[in-house]
Image (cartoon, rainbow, N blue to C red):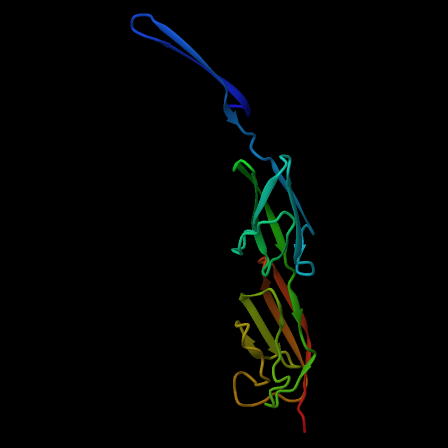
Length: 212
C-alpha cells in the first residue's frame, strides 16, 4: 500500500438482500518510511587515518539516527558521529533513521580499513645479556605470526640460526649452542605475512657487537 490517507467504504448485504453502507473518512493513515543515506571520510580508512567521520540524514524530516559501526561497539544515537576502529578489517556499518511515527528504515555500507605492514629491523645488536638490544628480529605492526621464517648466515654462507616463530629473535648464539657468535657482519633473510595475507621478504646485513 502506498503511503497516504485512505477513506474506507463499508457495504454490508444480508441474506435477505438488505444493504447498509457506511463511509469512514480519512480512517487509515499510511506513513512513508524514512529514506536514510550517509557518507563518511576518509575512504578508504587507513592506519594513518583511522578516525572515521560519518554524516547521516534522511529525505524524511524530523528523524532520529542510530549507528551500528559493525565492530561490536555500542550503538550511537546522533547523526554525525566520529568513530575510531582499533583493528584493520571490513566492517558492515548500518545506519537507521526513525521518524516521529515510529517508522524506521536502514541502509548499510561495508567499510574497508586497510593496513600496511610496518617492519623495523635494526642494523646492529649487542647480545651481552643486559636486556638492552640483546636480540635481532623484526618488530612492527600487522605482522601475522603464521608463515614466518628467519635465517641467519655467517660470512662463509653457513646457516647459524633458523626460526619459524616470530617471538624467537636471534640471541646471537650459533646453532642453539651456548656460544655467542663472533663480532662481525651477518646476513639475514626474513619472510613474513601481513594482515592482508601478503608475503614480504627482507634481505640484509646485521652487525653483532659486544661491549667490553
